Structures are given as C-alpha cells and as structure tokens.
Length: 130
Image 1 (cartoon, one colour):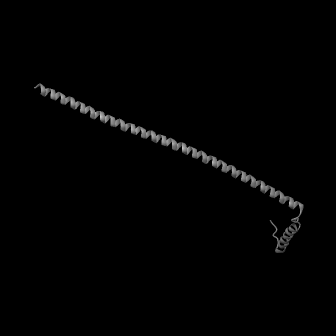
Image 2: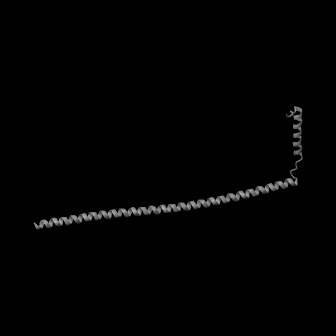
Image 3: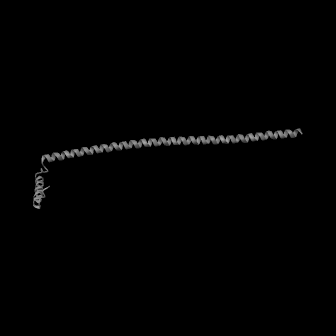
C-alpha cells in the first residue's frame, strides 16, 4: 500500500520543484554568451537553407505546372485541329453525297425525258403508219 503524504509534505515537495525551476532559469546563459550567439546563428543558417529549399521546390513545381499546361494546350490544339479536319472531311463527304444525289436525280429526269421522247416517237411513227 502506498503511503499517503500529508499536506505539509506535498507542499514542501512542490516548493522544492519550483525552486529547482527558478534556479535553472537563473543559471541560463545571457543573450550575448558566445554559445547562445552560435546557436542563434546556426538556427538562422538552417532557416535560410530551409527557405532556399522551399523556394527552389516552389520554382520547380511552377516549372512543372507550366510544362504540363503547355503540354495540355498543345494536346488541346491537336485535338481541335483533328476535330476541324474531321468536320471538314464530313462536310466534304456530305457535299459529295449531295452532288451525287443531284447528279442521279438529273440522270433520272434525263432518262425519263429520253424514254418519253422515244415513246412519243413510237406513237408518232404508229400514227404515221395508219
């Protein structure tokens, strides 16, 4: 079983802990101490190096994004050109089909006219024979 400390004992322990913290705070080196200055300079150098790395990383990422955007733009232009070529080809095929339909219609009309002329000639020849 644990021994339960009374209030005076707990207070004495807390006061001792506070005194140790105060002593530690008082014994810390001054701001102009060479060790403190060296650590501050080292931290500053580390921070600057980190900032340079981050800037380089950001520049690299921006370059990659720009390259990707340029590639996407080129692909879009290629797709647009292909789409335009397909549309032009489709229009040309449609125009050719329409022209063929018109030519066929003209031939049908001309054939009908020629058959009518031949029939009329046969009828006229039959009438002339009578």
